[in-house]
Image (cartoon, rainbow, N blue to C red; front, side):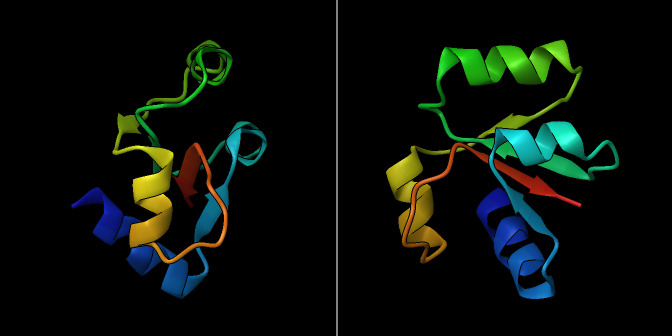
Length: 77
């Protein structure tokens, strides 16, 4: 379900990639992280009180979204 949400948001241009973008933007509808996200990234999100849902591995997410890079954090604005 959430991969579908990210795909739809990508088509609309409403997806931010990476932890820095998630921390910069305070008005986010949803944040997703991969299950193999680094501990320090999770700690940064928790410290900023950003709620997130955990998805599959980075490689699986990149393949499903047809990305040519791996990303740990996806934010929908």
